[in-house]
Image 1 (tube, rainbow, N blue to C red):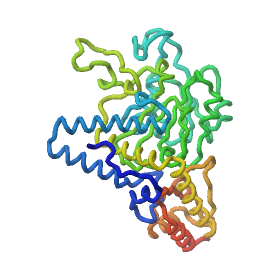
Image 2: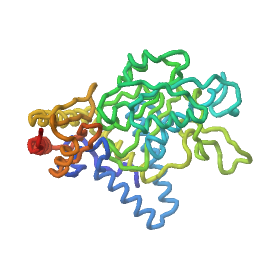
Image 3: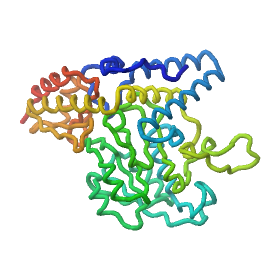
Image 4: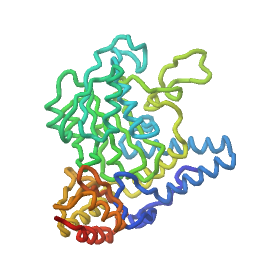
Length: 396
């Protein structure tokens, strides 16, 4: 079976044995090397597909998808039916942007019922962080180009006060990154939820949060998160949460045949949307990728998000302390996350980045700052290596 093939994890030490990335790997905000359990799941799926087991393989992948939905629902405080799987975080956000595009369903109308000219209300506006990761911005810009919500940008961090400043009767939705990819700023989702009230939709990009922080997803109406970063499950699948409480306010805009009732044997088309988050899917997901995502989610559930978050924070603090001791200027994440930054006064950032790379440290250079994003598996030797490398950087 492809379901629950990861080893039982009851202690942090067992969890850490799942990983063997190089000691200087500090770039989980870009990509997280997969766990041993994920590797087993992907290997088994490839072998099953290679050997031609046919329907048995498909049944296993379907079962793995159901298991992954249960795991995601458990982590997010949702029902499994509120979880669907798409190809990426960006795909999920495009689905959200187009679900809110055009006119909202009129009173009593089922999601997806009627045409674009049916009874409804004006498209309205969505608040989006101007400096958010582009994957969280372009879905709204592209939807706006096709009659969707008008994009009203927020400069700077998306805080509750910033949202309040831009709020008016036209605002139907707020889109926010739970953790900012560049700075590590952690958005106050509960405070934003309180500001916007229950009648507006809160859309959350959680790819830099889930698996790195102890995320309270309760405030999110719609949430998307791929598996390739902190969940350490590789590319090809992302979870999409669409809560029942907003189903009546979303019109499936990117829905394909997988999102409608009885698409194969139906005597006519279009068909009505399926209930739940799956209504917003284009086609069936990548089965092995979803199984791998499920294995990544299971690891987080087994150890507990709070314990993993504490280990990530400890590793990041150790790195930033080491950088400070070596003369670097550091920026710690506001609100707490797995992403911190450093720069060396008087040194070319590109030269600093090359020095770190030559010292076996994988980091990202962005906006003149070196981004550090360790994981729970990052050992103390990384901090010592970082300090030594920074001390070797020539400064003016």
